[in-house]
Image 1 (cartoon, rainbow, N blue to C red):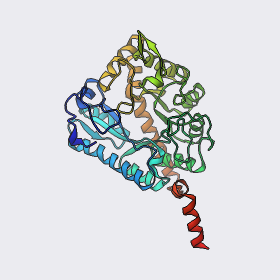
Image 2 (cartoon, rainbow, N blue to C red):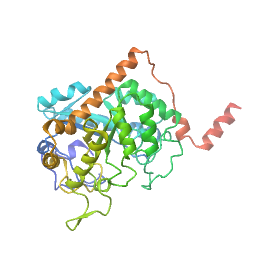
Image 3 (cartoon, one colour):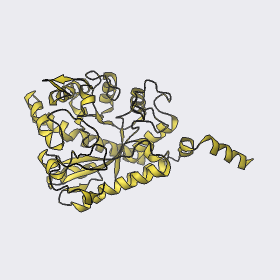
Length: 361
């Protein structure tokens, strides 16, 4: 989508946008303002069906789009390079913008590509999307089927190297979308807090994208964060019915917040709506203008202003900051940039490998 094709300064609730998967937008400036959004994770996403140099190019173009968005609307958006940038930008009335790569396949098996994405503003990466990158097991396959098995054991050795390099860079390791064993392995290997950028709790919704309680307990030890997603199928399942209507509501989303707080603690919970990343959303939370509905429900349930501040953003800022702190520690320890490369093993066909062997012989 070209920025010139849509006027983001107006409410586009009723606009049909051709060329995007859901043909509607959940985000624009009026609705961001209505929802009180002060910081935004922009997913620089490319589907796992793209591989090789093509997926790297698409990711670069997506990062450039976020930079263009900030350049075109400087009174509204500004890039946040560090956690410490976010609150001053919020105080100035602007929305702090952070890029996140939503799938490890987007680095094309290259730690050098990962480093360059970080240098351009990417501050987290989801280890897998639907379909794995070849070095981490996903929860859901590319065709949408559930992955019961984890043939890599969660993380291959290159996957461990990716986690280590992200720690060294100060990037947040995001374990939404991954298999439960991948969640466990990432928590075992990460020196820094990790993040579920858009997931809910499996105790309340038995979807493999959601987080089991034993992982929530490990997340508490790790000082990471689970950001509760608003998509109905991850909140209440495909066939939940309330008031004669199918789908979750703001009440079920608040239930997930309650459960995550109960198990992982108030310091490890946030919100990750996943707007413009799926459909349908829980009723009452249909777009970015609706965050206040959830805030009101949580107030009704007795959450204090301090607790709400943590859930609405301060916990996420803390995780970003602590990841930066770990990177500084590793720098002082003399940690060197990783040089592992997994690209050929991922994307080369058997015929190409045989041809290269013939050339060497």
